[in-house]
Length: 244
Image (tube, rainbow, N blue to C red):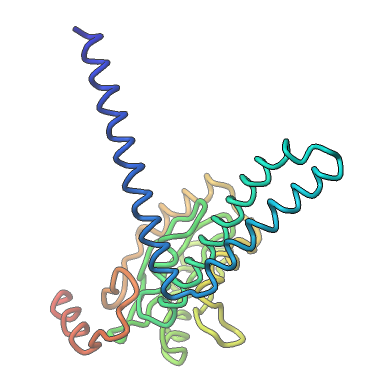
């Protein structure tokens, strides 16, 4: 009986794995079709990278009389290069669309790679200026988005509030934007990865527990980049209702 149940469970798991794989391939294909419509250079770049890498490996093999042995590796590496280029161009398009929209920084932080502890919207205004808090090996990183003349004050207030609890722990602050003293949304991940590593994982956990006592200040933020055509007044009215 147990053996039969195990077989059925394995069969079901295999079926679910195939379904998940099919869904993932479908999502990739849809992303490819959408990107191709907006990015006319996508196919030339992907095809060019494939041909260059496969051709180089075949050429090297030809010199040493092993071209047919190296050809499969050239094809595999060429496909890999094309996939990497596809992924990067899709990412660039997504960030370009999100850039400048309210909630874009929170969305970008939610998609960070690595061991980061993100608390979105620890401070905000009804105009959707916001400060988000990130904990990691560098210490505390406060990421602000919104109108610079308002967000700088909001950022300074949050930095002061956090420093009262954490003492000498390093605090970094960054404003998302395109000005010289700001960080572009698509470069946020790289910026954070380049910060010095000041803390060990256990220290980060202790820091998170300490900062848990701080509540969030201000209005709620959208859970992702707001559509460009969204009516700000209507959204603000909804926020005020939720806060009432």
